[in-house]
Length: 247
Image 1 (tube, rainbow, N blue to C red):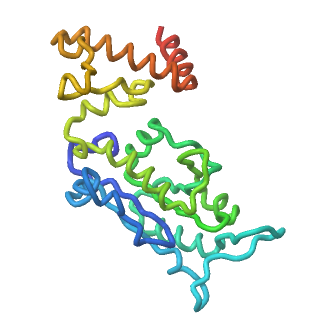
Image 2 (image 1 turned 60 degrees about the horizontal axis):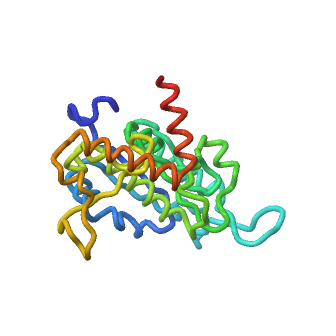
C-alpha cells in the first residue's frame, strides 16, 4: 500500500501523538501547506492525552526516580496503557517513536522512511523522561531532533511531523522542488535569488540570467558542493563516499 500512495486511493497518512498537552497540536502544522493538506485529508492527526490513563483521582502520570536524583519520571504502567490503547485501535501497527535526545538523529533519510509508512505514533515525554522498561517492552524506538534538550517532546514532534508531512504527495505543489532542496542529493542547497536583479548594488550571478540551462545546472551543483564542503564536512565526506561507490 505504501508504494502506491498517491497513485490510487488509500487511507491518509496518519500521526497519533501521545502527550500531556494535546492542545499544542496541530499548532503551526494547522497553517500553510501542512494545514491545507490536513484539511484536505492528505494526512490525519490524532492526539491522545496520557493523563486519561492515570490510575488515581489526581491523574498522576509521574513519580520519583529510583536511585534518587532531581525531577520526576513518567510511570511505565500509565504510558504503556496509552500505547496499548493506540495500538489496539491502529490499522497497521506502525512505528512507535519516543522523542528523546538519546535517539537516532532525525534526518532527511528518516523522513523519507516515515513517509513510506501508513502512519506513526509519537510519544512526547516530559519531566526527566520515561521509565526505560516501557521503551524496551513495547519496542519503542527513540528519535532525536538534535543535540540539545527541550522542555518536552511536543516541539520535537512538531519538527518531525513537518519534515515528514511536506513529503506526502500533494502537499507541495511542485514536487520537483523536493528533488533540489538541501539533503535531497546528499548536499546542502545552492543559493537562491529573485527580483530585483540589482539590489543595493548587488547583482544576481550572471549565469542565472543567461537562459543556458546546462550552465545553470552546473553552477548550482558547484555551489551546492562548495557550501556542503565548507559548512558540513560530515555530509561532504558521506557524499564523496557515495559518489565513489557509484563509480
